Length: 183
Ligand SMILES: Cc1cc2nc3c(=O)[nH]c(=O)nc-3n(C[C@H](O)[C@H](O)[C@H](O)COP(=O)(O)OP(=O)(O)OC[C@H]3O[C@@H](n4cnc5c(N)ncnc54)[C@H](O)[C@@H]3O)c2cc1C
Image 1 (cartoon, helix red, strand yellow):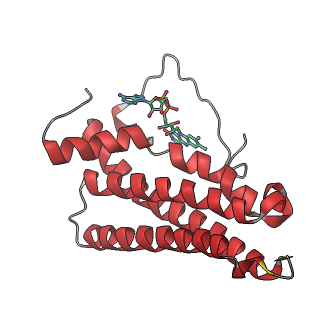
Image 2 (cartoon, protein in one colour):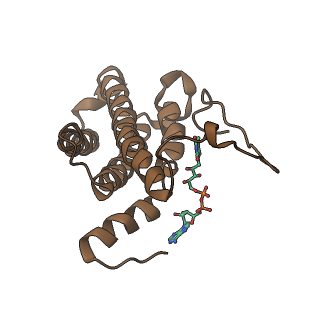
């Protein structure tokens, strides 16, 4: 794997499996039960994406203060500051959206579309942020010892699991229009 290498994944094939009634998961009778799980795990991934973006931003921020070019730290260049501020905006916006959704979750009123919106928003903003973080590190951005490359790689897995951007978008789209674009 190129991302989240610490997470162990395996392909499991089940053939002719008989599950006795006593081993069935209680109260899990339909896809609605799966959706209930996804609602919670999608919020977790939205936070994971925010953490990934924040980690990349913090590394980039530190780097810009220590790296000198043309006789000054690169943190003083306007175009570098532009990227730093855009990264901070993304991290701040994702944090705010996720805090609100987590409050709804605590109050027991989080809906599928809330979790999907958080997942879409946080992962899209994360992907943008880790790219900019890598950019401000210049050539050093591709060296693992500078850590930002790890965030870039991990972001790709976070972007796709617990439902891709497209699928989570369609869940939100269905909620706001009343029309389902998928079956
Ligand atoms: C590191 C990692 C860990 C994972 N862990 C788990 C796990 O623990 N449990 C688990 O069940 N799964 C797990 N997954 C699987 C993950 O949830 C799926 O990879 C993800 O949901 C996307 O499904 P897919 O790979 O089958 O993509 P596909 O469904 O083949 O989609 C491919 C592309 O087509 C798009 N697409 C598909 N259908 C539509 C449509 N109707 N309209 C528009 N676009 C569409 C998708 O958005 C995507 O861009 C993991 C994946 C990774 C990378």
